[in-house]
Length: 393
Image 1 (tube, rainbow, N blue to C red):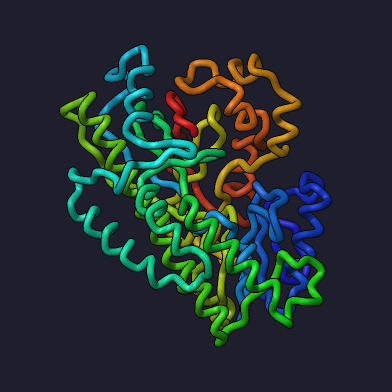
Image 2 (cartoon, rainbow, N blue to C red):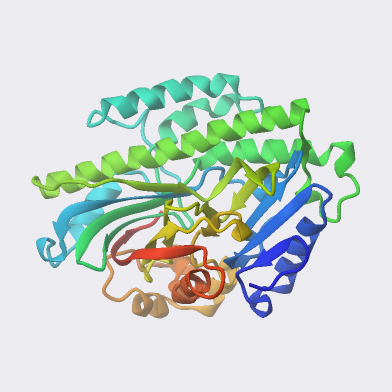
């Protein structure tokens, strides 16, 4: 766990691209930064690296959260086993894609949550808070936010059917706050860049809001709303997904869900200081916390349990992390490579998801090893989840 000053790393410095290293130095040097923990999946991002946990005193940097506020994971074990599944999972994938809009698609209106009236009420109540959002120029996004709650999106977001180490079937998904989270983040980042105390920063994308100011109060208000929206989005998709599986397997039962954000803000105390902690591409891993660390569309995922390592700000990685940009991936790989790397998995194998090919990501096994072994582990593995079906937008 090499590190200097206020920075601790669970990544080999030599594997971090120079631009990301400079971002880490920029963050560590900010006058408000007290602690910085660098996860093994760290890579270049806008302003702050993906895979970094930043603890600030009296300030918060919106780019240290990311524009997909509240993005995260949800998973649920089922009573099904591998032998209960049909050889051809194509019809199941088609049924999932019919029930849950993916990519740029959305529901015609609010998602049909009749299977969970309590959740439907929570969603309705939360969406009433839309009119209280503080960011400018988002009023016309209200109907879109309603229709997108319970939708997957695109990019690295996914819905999967997986098998754990004992052959039990799990359902898993990865998504965030959809367009409204992005709009809120961008509006507030734009506002932060214009504040006088940010004008001399080495990277304007690291603009911060200061405590006890109307700007920070407005940002945190909108951010917490978006974080809850992202959670409700995932819970809504799980209800729809469970409905699909229940129709295919009427006797199925579902276990206790595991959920976690990995782009979010929390207020935590370290070294006796009350700090604003931003996790961008990182999950909370307090002692006993269950978390989910996914790989790419062909490499499976892990259920982990946090060890409460305060040197790592009680955090862990959010996934494998990209090792190359989407543009580079499209140039480096072919559709034949995609078919080979996703062999045996029911999923799209077309040009639209080529930039999500497993080869564009870091080795998930190495990322897990970096945070489960050595003198300062962050998590322990509960089970590995092998992907057998993957839905992407």
